[in-house]
Length: 217
Image (cartoon, rainbow, N blue to C red; front, side):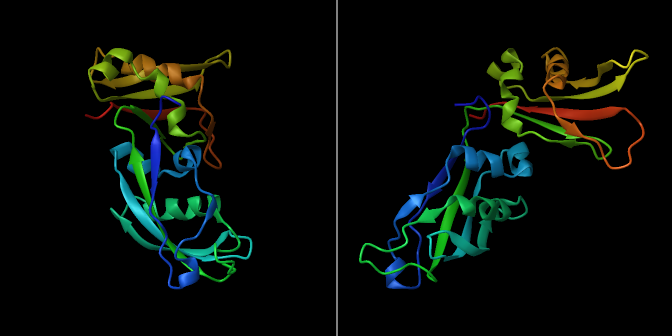
């Protein structure tokens, strides 16, 4: 299992307005990787957990279609939108145990988003429109070990630009708090990042802020 935020999914039995879909048989449900892939970045950065409920229509092949967000808590972190992105990972049997077709039936699916408290988290925000193309849990092994063990949070601001030999040189502009290795960890990340520049950018300088959130109690 990756060292990054390990997310888990709690599924309640879907409720349905018709008796034929009271106990749908799931052929496939989202796995850990699917949940990690769609966990909202803003929620991860703040360590926010929550739930969303989606309402969907079941297609003839058991896939979910026409899904909408029925509820999300807490609001404002994109958990409902994340649940909609997870919806294609669901598939149920085309017929109920009683043999009735599920096509056209409606289901409400509660999905819970949670973070393993033992895991640390690193987030990166590029300045000036630069975008990070990777998922945040790919970097967790670079969290400074001592800071992680002591559950110290921090951040570092880094600048990367080419020198006269066209080699990219990265330097630490600031580090808070000092003495915990956050600046060096931010530099170590640079060789592993994939980033996209903003459209029309001419300055070949990239500045970013790397935030480190320790494991929770």
